[in-house]
Image (cartoon, rainbow, N blue to C red; front, side, top):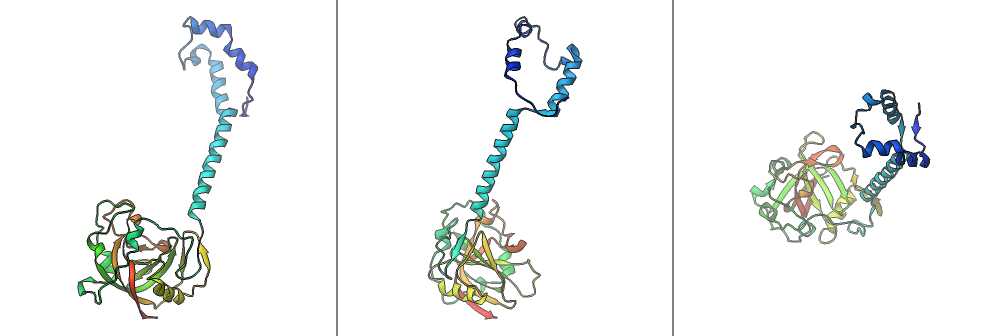
Length: 273
């Protein structure tokens, strides 16, 4: 009984293909149907069955090795892509940051009104109660509906995440809310006119420059940091998992936050620190 890799034999391959017995059986129609070997030659059939299960052809081994190498290379390339380093040289400068979906809509510079009406002043739980707008979103989909209105959102900062597209992502929750629950999102793009807001926040969390990271970097936030932000609402469909009717997604450190965001934040006021 053999085990392992079958040793190829050119002599045997030629012999079996030039056999007179094989030619007669095939040309005269005497070849038994596939699977009838147990009747015509049980001993040979049993041997072949065991042989095929205890050995592997050298060609199949080569194909498997090549396939494994291709898969490993693809996984490594994908991992490298995910881990592509971005570097912040200051609160407002990130030469290697890369923009994502609907970037022109995320970075509109329209200034908010002097005051926000009472029905547009939200708590994190109120923003979480919104449903997704539905419809179809592409990389160039323009703002519509609530996305064209300014809102005010007040909450305790639970997470400050610096993202690879340059945004500062705030996860806000009402005081007393259990950890990782009831959070709502607000984002501050890089560049002007957001530099002063970004500088204040990154100074608060003790950021030093330059710093680099792959997918994102999470900063430790003072426990009592509460802020009020003002900006346009934005449905970040990049995080809706293909269902534009939902308003819940995974946030930093396995937390849950909203797909609806205040984005971009045009005003930020620190209420307590």
